[in-house]
Length: 253
Length: 287
Image 1 (tube, rainbow over the protein chains, first blue to last red):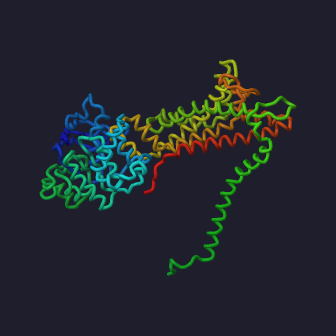
Image 2 (image 1 turned 180 degrees about the vertical axis):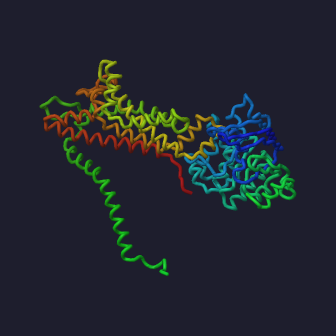
Image 3 (image 1 turned 45 degrees about the vertical axis):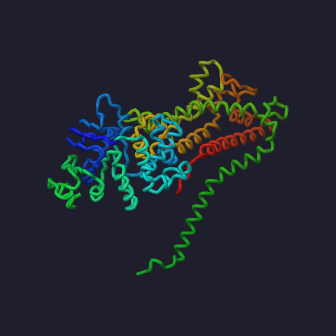
């Protein structure tokens, strides 16, 4: 089951440059939330703060609190590795591990965390690939082909399967379809719709139609601030902030 | 306006032809010395190369026959010790420089590695002589291995670093995002992605030190008899070749050629074997 998210007074920096300013946001369990905004507005940094990936960049810093389900993400006793284990992430460019087979890619998250029970692992890999709608296309070449031999759209679904295999409570997607063609994009969007029944999803997107299609709620970021956050329908029909309206009507961005 | 699709003019075709010929010539010039060396080695060495040569120890001066079996085994032993020292230290330093090092210290390490790469091999030999041989009061395969290992480190460290830096950061982030700890990400994802280049660097370093003579002269020292104890003076092919080549005896000259041929063959076999073993089980990369 998906979990809720509560972000309080989140600030983030790269060196001296502040990229996130006092972000406060609440996400309901099993909802899809879209994060939109022009390039450089901090939307990627925002999701990377949710699973503590932001701090892996040299000189990057975070302040504030993030609660994901029962995990106090920035709590003093919280281990960043443990947080990332429980929060899955899909990146902008498909990034399967190039030297691993399709099977090994999906199993990587479990195996490299020390889980190696063979029959269970087979089942988990199959389930994850089915959830990512990739099973039928790859079931005959699981161990024969490397992850990087697949097409771009398949690679991205493989990355989704890899994230799902560790059974995360929350799935973060950082522009998961921006490098894909329209058909692959459609498949990913359909997939997000199905994943919603089991996971909470936060998706960063450049594509406003995509946000309108997949998201229950949408947050609009501008220059490191959360300008408006509401039901997707409201954001795209009657936004309450002038800047949101300007952005979604294409006046800038 | 001239049509773009008109046939190439005679002059353009002539220039094109000249460049193809020139680049082919350059390629031949690169290959020629290697082929010449190998051909000459075979020509000079094959006559003395026989079963006795690779199974017997040297005979005393004046007697014909005998071989370099002890030197072949000694070389394998010294290179083995060198690899045991050079591989983990070199790869470890490369990992540090690429993945963990920040700021001044890593620059110092990189600079030191480059300087060490340029240190003449005989200087490395003297250093090991002072540090190991003098302290132990005797020559040994071990000290020879230490000298060769030290020489392997900078090449391996720098190529490992370069190869790891070529792995896109998105691969590291994918692993970290799965909740894989940093050390496992480095060893089982990043290093695994770069392993082909790392192995190439290691083979390069291995092949380079396999022919080193100077640092072995006062470390392994050489030995006319069988020795399998790494703590004793040990024969090595380059030393044996050197000693025989500068001797006044024709028989020894012939054996030096055969030894040189064996050395080259050993290097080629070792490098090819590693290539075959490490390329086995690689995935199909094309759809």
